Image 1 (tube, each protein chain N blue to C red):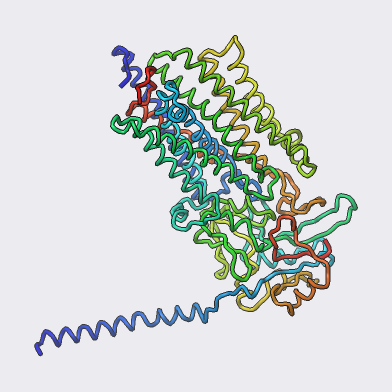
Image 2 (cartoon, helix red, strand yellow):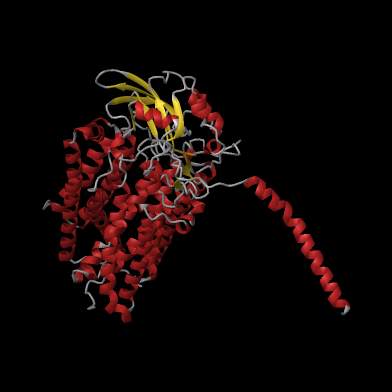
Length: 395
Length: 238
């Protein structure tokens, strides 16, 4: 245990810890209850419909899955690129990855129309489906990260941590490619169906994963009243800034390319100007809150201290949710172009902007997924030694 | 022979007899239920040719017939199932107006079948694209992938289903081309109900069928032919 404080603060901390775990547990229970309601009444109690078929649960789930892959960047830099400061943090990154993957996948699974049939996804396997590939990729990711953690935490296995780290490094690239490809393979949707999405998801994962890592790390340091090495903090902070910029570049390229194609300009006008909540979330949520403010906090000489890095990380996460909301839900709200050159109208929403108002149960389900990630992390850190040790052990 | 042996034989005989009596009616019913099963073959490709010039603006008979045949509620909310819908089109340049029925286009290369993780979306040998309601886990990826917005998700518990048309809460569904009627040698309900005979149903693979002859003589198109899906539904006058 790393509780090195005197007795009474220790008692206080214990109580605080158990209350935090209890709150996390409560959030998870609420999510499970929401899923139960959705199964009982059907998706009619959500805001999703036949036009917006994927909603808030998917925003949460995909955020968690992307961040789960990106957070492993910290361990890759340690294991694959041999940076001792990052190597010391690799176990924590591994734990966060497993926690977020578990949270995200639980949400995806519980949002299914028939979650009780999830076993069918294993017994009946369609080789052409990227969803089916992802079932292998996601479960393989769990296994790979668990093995990687084992090689790092078990002294006898330490010599294997480099190959295990390399496996995880490769695997998460493939996994995030698989997540991006879910959308790339949608031939007829104007928001999707482009090969830029997988690399964009990979770069975005670096930024979001780093943001999650910063928050977890800062909380652990504050909890143990330890302070971070200033040099390491500066390196990690600047790296996060670089990732944010790179992600913004990809998002900008995606929209600029679309703007150049006459057949896509209507869609871009909708997402960037006329679409109501979507342009608002894009410009204010993603560009301003998710990029400009965090970059200011990271690079401006007046900021850049530990607290501004935490705020920047929180903003990056908020920006991430905004971007996914715009991409996933805005991408479906814009009508399919079934009859190019014609104005279409029908009883089934042809030619009309899809309406979507997320309901409480689906939001609770999504937040429940975050709760699962929090619980796994909090309990993991308590039970095993995930706290970064500033003086790295030689491999 | 000892008494025990005789008794044992007697017991075995009685058991076999009882088992036969128990199983026979089941076997008989199983045979009756399945009838003479003949596998569908790829020699047939079912398709439709829809004449938009004859399709009357405001006429909804195909939709009503579909709802009745398949036990759909006919509700029009965004969460209600609509297997076929009337789409009103207006050419953005010329202003010409067209009305047509839109449903699953029964593609030769259906994106819904490609993306389905469990293989629940499938294409029969005769070209009809269906959803196996026992395998569908309700992920809705097929709805994301369909270029024609042809699929609906069952958002609520269902009541009073038709025995020939299995449906299920939490699964995806779409036009089945009235496969249960087609297999009995009948026409899909929409084709039969159209007062102007605008929906011509038939075998695209048979050069002598009425639909094949007509496709050879009149101009018709596939919707979003640029996607290369080779739909089984064609439109005339669009």
